[in-house]
Image 1 (tube, rainbow, N blue to C red):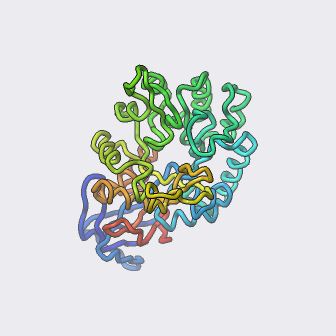
Image 2: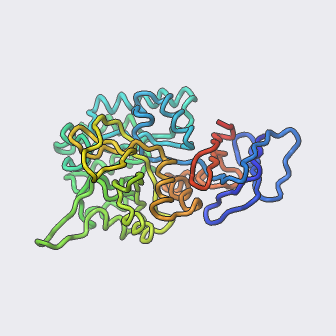
Length: 379
C-alpha cells in the first residue's frame, strides 16, 4: 500500500488541502483530510504540493526527438517521467500503407510486452486530410480518391486501438471511410483536422461521433464566400458546437495558438471542452531568422522554415497554459487529464475517485512534475 500525505488534492472543481491518498492494488482506495494510514504502508510526503490525475496526451508523435513508433520503450519512459500516464501515439498522414501497417504492428508488439503501460491506443492523424495543410504535405500519398481498397488494411489493422480518426470532412466520399472506421471500432472518435470544411460539412458528421477539433487554429483554412468577407470555417464551427472538444498546442511563445486566442477559446469553450496536447514531432529545421520566432525553443521547424509540431511534452503545455491564460492548476488538470479521459470514454481515470486507476502526478504551483505514480506504483 502507498500513502501520499501532506498534499493538495486536485479535484475537478476544487482542492482538498492537507490531504492523504491511499493506494492499493493499483487503485485509489481512499482520500481526504482524515484518512488513517495503515501500519506498514509506504508513505510519500508530497510536501504541500499538488496531487492530480495522471496526464493524458491524446495527440503526440514523439518524445526526446524520437518518434514513438520508432522506439516505443524509450519514448514511453520519457513521457512517463513527465507525468504522461496515458498516451495515444499519433500516426501521421505522410506514411503510406506499408508504413502505417508497420507502425501499428510495432506499437502493438510493444504494448503486448507489458513494458509500455502508458501507451493505450493510436491517434490516427490521417490518412484522409486536406492535402493543402500540414507539415510535410508535399509527401502526402493520400491525395487521390478515397477508395475502400486503399484504407481497409489500415483500418482493420488499427482495430479498436484506433481511438481517434482525423478526417477532412470536405474530402469527397469521406463518409464512406467514416462508416467503415466506425464499424470496426464503434467507440472511436472522429476529429476535424487539416481542413477547410464548412460548418455544414462538419456538422453532417456529428452523428458518427465527430467530437474533436485537431490543433485548433493550426492547419485549418479560411473560407470566403464573398470578397473581403470572412466566412465561418473549421475553427468557428469548433467553437460554436458545444459537443466538439478543441485541442490546443500551448507553446512557450504562443505561436501555435496566440495567447489572446487561447484566452478567447477558454472563454467560449469553458473548462469542459478544452484538451491540451503536445503534438511533439521530429523535424530538423532551424528556428527561422528574425524576431518573429524569437524564443520559440519548444517548436519544431522543417527545412522550409514552416512549423512542424512542437518539442514539448504535455507538462510543458500545462505550464504554458497557466502562463498565457491565468488558468488555475485545477483547470489545467481538467484540460490535460479529465477532459481527454471523458472524450475517450475512460471512466476509470482522469479524476481522483475511489476505485479509479491510481495514475497520479505531483506538481508544484508552476506545474513542474515532482513525482509520478503509474497503476499504483511510484515511478
